Image (cartoon, rainbow over all chains, first blue to last red; front, side, top):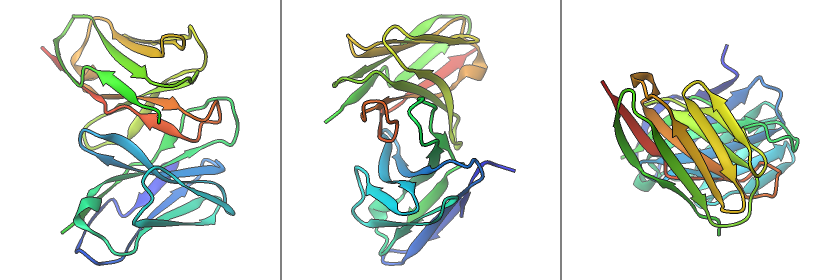
Length: 114
Length: 113
């Protein structure tokens, strides 16, 4: 089984709809992240969480909210989707230490907002 | 604001040739990561560079970090088609805490027979 899973993998929705993207991990990592990837722009951090009670905004949090339901689960919500939120969304995890281990990425969710 | 620039953004090369991808960043950091992404896939960690002068090699790829010059390089030796992918560098802007990475825009590498 995959260490980091994301659901759904693909989603098409309409402007104004609420949508939730879910991420689950079995790596036992404390830290979890949500990124979006747009063509030609690399990845940008939306939110990150150190543990269930510690959630922080990233570079581009406007229009998004998150929930850390458990150590292993981190959800991203778009309260009212708009077309410029069409992107590839990645969940990532990392250990809560300073050893420099790379963040581990999930398979991604392709979201299209019409 | 930390800026990370990769050059080139597009690279088309022939099998068997050598080339280098550059990653420049604008503020002090001594941790840099290289990732690979195949089309439609997730990001896979290639190298973790944790100090000035760090050099890591895996197969035909070698990465290095010069924190004084704020520069990392990803050198490709004798390219093969399987290396075709997008390569990203990412800089840790938290002084070693590894929770805020700034990514470059990526280098799309195409290796032609």
